[in-house]
Image (cartoon, rainbow, N blue to C red):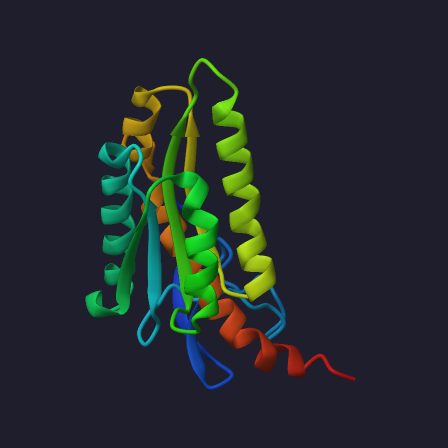
Length: 196
């Protein structure tokens, strides 16, 4: 069951009345006893997402938003189920993300912004507070937050991470939010089998 590169293959199996993607070991066997492992699925049918994006450094943020939106649509989320919420800068991302999460309208949030190091300590304050604020949003609301707040030294690094040679970090964050949304949705049913 290996693919051409020799990496583990993915198969679609039913689990608890729901279908999901499970990883097979290199020899084609499941690495866990049946039903004792849960992974979030990368399928978004019926889910809704908010892309919360910073206008500051918009030249670099727009490709991140496009990557996030494209990744979600490719994985079954309807385009009309993806909202874009634009804030002035990265420092404002946590507050908008928290309000979106508390609205109950979204299965997951994807936070997108670019903070570049300058000549003062401003970078450290904005990057640190925005990062910890986004983590608090997920912890306090229980809504997954995909993290695509890029903290970079220069524009070249931004180009590489917004669709260049380092991939698109917006797409990666969107898939993390999608996977966690499914995992959190499936976790209560999965955990019931371990109650004694």
